[in-house]
Length: 466
Image: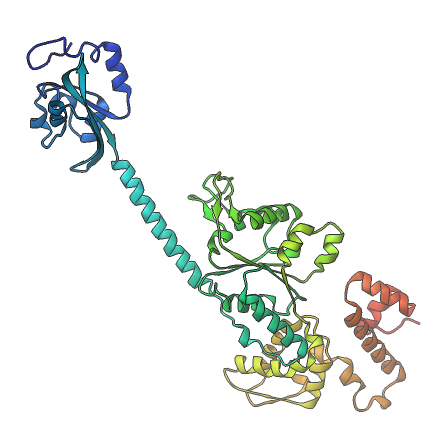
C-alpha cells in the first residue's frame, strides 16, 4: 500500500484498497489523489493519457513540482472545493473539478477529476468547419441554380397569355405552393423560373427536377438524400437531397403527374411537416422551400381514377396557373418567330412571306412553343439573315399542310386529291378540338361513321383501296 510523505499508511486506507483502485482505473475521467503534504499518491491511466505525462513520473512527487500552477494544493489547504476550472497545457485542454478529502472532519488530502475537452474542442472546430463548408455549398448552389428567366421576358399579346402572366406575377409575391398546368412545350419551367425570379426567394437556389425522368426507386434518395451506407451503392459520405439543396429557394417538381403513388405519400408528409429525413438517417432536418409543381396531365381525372392522391393534389394546387397552348394564342406566333430568329441569328432578321405566315398560323403546333422554336432554328440554319422565308425553307411536315394544297390552282387538281386534302384538314381540326388521345380519336370515328384504321389512313393521306 502506498505511503504518504511521512511514511503513514492510515491516511488512505479506503481509497487504496485493491477493489477501489480497480474501479478508479476503469473510470474514463482522469483522477489524481494527493495527501495533505501535497504529494501525489495515485493517478489513474486516463489522467496520464489526458495530460501526456507517464504515471511513474507523477507518483510520490510534490504536486507543485511536476504540475506547475496546480490549484489542488490551495484546495487542500483551504478545504474549499472548486469545479469547472479550465486548464490548457500544451496541446491538452481539460476541465478540472477539485475537492478536499476529509476523514472524521480532518483534511487528509485532495482529489482532482479531469475531464478531457481536447477531443470535444476538435469536434467543435470540425463542426464549425463543416457548417462553414455547408454555408459555402449552399451559396454555390444558390449561384449555380439561380433562375435565368424573368416574367417580363415572356413574349405574347394574346389575352389568355397575358392573363396567365398577371396571375404568375401575383403568385410570385406570396409563399403558397403553385401548380402549373399546360401541354408539353408550353414553357412551364420558364414560368416557374420567372415566378422564382420575382419572389423574395430570388437570391436562393432554383432547383428543377423531372419526376418522370428519374426511376421511382431512385427518386426518394434524389429528393431527400441519403447517408453513407444507407444502401448498396450509396456514395461515401452520403448525399444531400434536393430539398436540402433548395433551402431558402424554390424546388420545381416537373411532371408531377408521373410520380409513383408510393412516392406521393412520402412527398405529402414532407410538405406537411416541412422536415426531411435522409434515407438511412434517424434525425429530421427542417427546410424552407417553396414548391412549384407542373404537369401536362389532367390531375383531376387522375385523382378520380385513384392514380394521384387527392390530399397531395390539394396541397400542391393552392395557386393554379394554366398556360394556354400555342394554337389558342395564334396572334403571338409571328412575334415569337421573329424573336427566336433574332436570337439564333445573333440580332439578325429575316422576312416572312405571306404564304409562310399563313402556314404558321394554320398549323396546329402540337409541340407548342418548343416546336415553333425548333422550326425557327431549322430555318435559321438553311437561310442567311435578311432572306425572304418561303414555304420551301420550312421543314417538310409544314410544307404539306392543307393551306398550300388548297391554295392557287386547286380547281385544276383531280377531285379525289382535293377531297383527300379536305378530309385531312377536317380530321386535324377535329383532333385539335377533341384531343389526340385514343378515346378522343374513337369519339371522332364514331361521329364520322368511320373506323380507327380509316382515320389513320386518311391522316396519312393514303388513297382508298377500291
